[in-house]
Image (cartoon, rainbow, N blue to C red; front, side, top):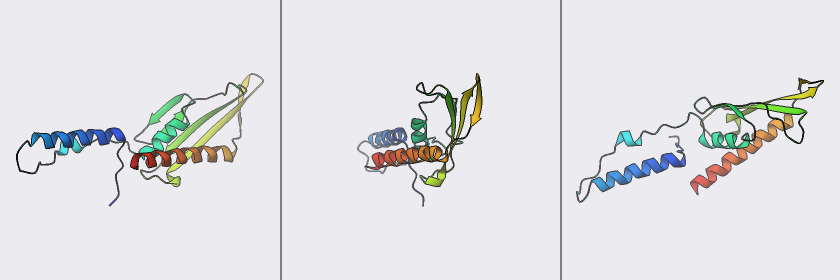
Length: 148
């Protein structure tokens, strides 16, 4: 049976609901009955560690779209102040609820300024790979922190 990973806020809600159920039983020797409504917590549709790590990694750029159910993050164009003649735009897609390398896909577009216009330019494959590595490393760190 797969393990379900809840974000810390969901764990808190479940813990508070469980404590309330135990307190309500008072001195009764009966076992408390599970409150299914309190246990039903809405979660995102993709791996929460990958989601949080991806948002954190691309947070330097303005967000155009962040759909946690579909697992898609799209940034707007970002130009580094140290290199204003170049800008990038990223799309991060989380494809699964498991924390795995193949559950993540990053796509990047790059443009350079030429004659007052933005012209498409190639993105090095190593750049996209580096972004994926950063996201995966952060996601694994978040998971380690949550289970320790």
